[in-house]
Amino acid sequence: MNSSKKKGSEILLAGARTIRTYPPLLMIVVLFIVFSILFPDRFLTPMNLSSILGQFVTLILFALGPSMVVTTGSLDLSYVGVWMLGGILVWHFTPLLGVAAILIIPLLGLVTGIIIGVIQVKARVPSFILTLSVSAGYAGLTSVLSGGYPRVVRGYEFLTARLIPYVPTALLWTIPLIIVAVFIMRSTKVGAYFYAIGSNEEGARLAGINVDRYKILAFTMSGLLTGIGSIIQFQHLGGSVPLTLNMNTLIQPLTAIVFGGTLLTGGSGGPDRTIIGALLFAVLYRGLYISLINPEILQLLIGLVLVLSIVIASRGLKGVTIT
Image (tube, rainbow, N blue to C red; front, side):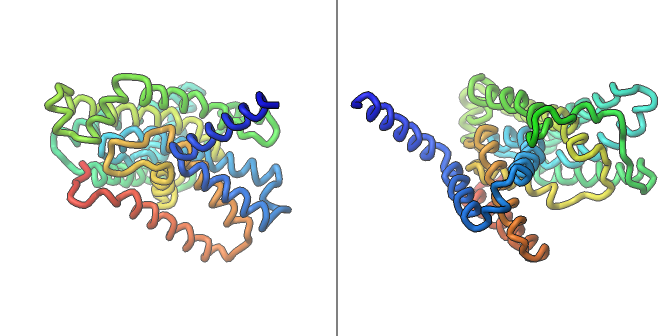
């Protein structure tokens, strides 16, 4: 009996420690309970839970790489551009290269990350403006290369063929990416240096860290992860190539990073927290969606949540410049 009580206490203490370390987990639990009580016949259905997982995948694949850049005190919003331009390049090259054409996307992400990193470090262009411009430029180039018509690429359906009922196969592909990203940030010198740069860039320089090199590395790794993730994302969203830059698609992954507890000033957070933030956003969105409120009102509420999250994440920005 005493042994059972001891194990129960240990479980409660472990749970309390986890909540203190990752407060958004408590919000996820609360939202689950609230939406389950309010909409028991719609929220806890297998279809809705599958939709939550699907939206989680959409968010995390775009947010995973950039969450590493944010720890250095910079921002990377190039992910949508890489996904769009990569998709239209796959459409052009699939007849020539076959299924191997899909590898163009991670290559594009890698090259884009290197270029952004070098420009940001050498020219000192604010990363927000630089990466947003890259996404906008890539979106324009996508429209030109598509001839102004939506394009759908066939032949990659095997990537997302359903293996487990109600579980998106894209999630199974995403798990290894998550493991790699978390390992790099939590168990390697590279991750430690990223946090050090975000916490105190000048102090990191004085400590002998090559700040410029590691900033370029952060953008490079972000671009590569975005490119690999975009392979999964591309087919997860039906193999279609969008022609316009959707601001929700651009901002929501950043919101997931913020929801996880990562400050835009850097030095904290990372992929492990972004996972929780993406799940929190997916639960919130689906809960509001099944409430059957007016779509315009839903869009307004999500917009307010985005603004609030940015304000919270920027609470330490006073007197600090994001590079």
